[in-house]
Image 1 (cartoon, rainbow, N blue to C red):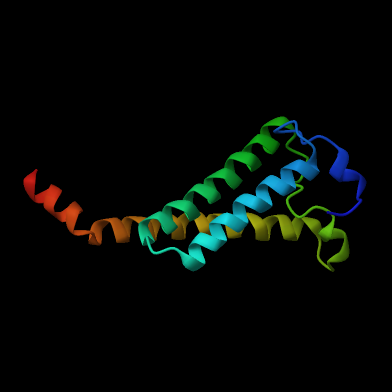
Image 2 (cartoon, rainbow, N blue to C red; image 1 turned 135 degrees about the horizontal axis):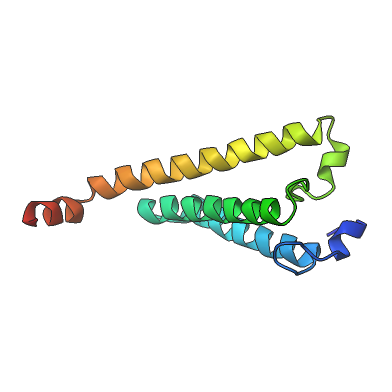
Length: 125
């Protein structure tokens, strides 16, 4: 929502402005967070977290394939205000995505296997 010059530049992967990309990503993340807080379907919650992590991985893969030296602009210009090395933040973000993906898959499989319909189908096979 700021006036940083990077917001007007097109994103290398998707071709839209960083401003539009940040709005879209923020909207998707907010909608998922709202469902995680208020939703009742645990399997859908796990699937949404897994899907979001896969989107993050696909985007980072796109950045890597287009320009391996470029870092992810995921945090915008916030990295300039933080007292951390940008490379350290990049590693931390990658670890968070791996955590989201592995947790989402683990709990999805665990919840799916605990569902009565799954056990019934397996007995029929």
